[in-house]
Amino acid sequence: MAPRAGIDVDTVLQKAVEIIDRDGYEDLSIGKLAKALSIRPPSLYNHIGGLSELKQRLAVLGCGKLYEQMIRAAVGLSGDDAVYALSLAYVYFARQHRGLYEATFRAPYLHAPDLKEAQEKVVQIVVQVLAVYELDEETTLHMVRGLRSMLHGFTSIEQTGGFGLPLNLDESFHMMIKTFLKGLPIKK
Image (cartoon, rainbow, N blue to C red; front, top):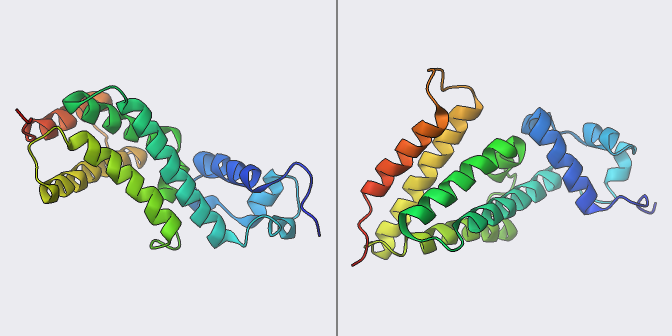
């Protein structure tokens, strides 16, 4: 059976993103996606090999979009300004694309080459931004891990409603990044 006119892999992925951003990653199913596309579930297999492949593609897509948002935020900046900008871009991405963000770390095949490549690009933009600090290669990677842990932790707690105190979340975020930056020595 030939694929339906007007529906291609990009259309399928975009509709899947809409579903997971609105309803959550766990709520994605072939049936729900087919219904949203106004096609029968078996017709989806003309475009994707199944739910696992779809989730894998969403993970790669999510990493790519996260990278694009981070790099746009950091262009033309350096030092603390660049770290703050890409950190803010990370959190904003997760806020705008809750489901797609979740897809980035819930891929069925975590060691697939295309996912590893997409993840590596995100890491490398942070490494590049940290290049202005007096850090050796190993310490830089530890700092990348630390920053990611803070950003992911903040984002995860925010998304699950874990910040119950009546304090401004953006202010808390700013203080967290400011504290992280105080520990990074700038090259002379």
